[in-house]
Image 1 (cartoon, rainbow, N blue to C red):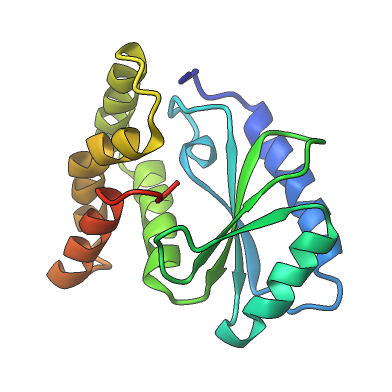
Image 2: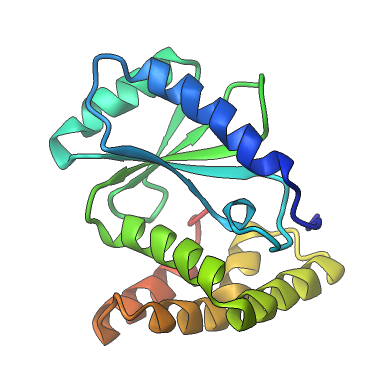
Length: 181
């Protein structure tokens, strides 16, 4: 289900950010970022807040332990190197939480998509149209949903100017592989 953007999503993110920050009291965090479509004002989205907890590579084990102690369930990298996925506890807003290694391709991808869609109205419009078209076709399988968005996501990433052709190919391959949700 894709719905129109709502002003409530940044508020929900802030609630999640505070909860996560409290869980990381003894583990270094570089930042906690609102990513994904709900972080882009005006963009239709699935009503799920995507959160990236940015940490240093050496802090991954501590970050996993911190989130587990807060009730999150560790799901592993799920096919995306340096992006560790978690299922959220049942309370609070619906969310996807990731621990992402600072500087990693996975994190750079998340931030570039968010930043370009925030700043480029035409790409935001086109990306939104793709999402709405997929929702109208009831594409329920997450792998198929991500794969179907890959062409427009590649345009977004190219527009960012932050990726080499090799990195763009890696991201496209990951988006077309199983288990990237």
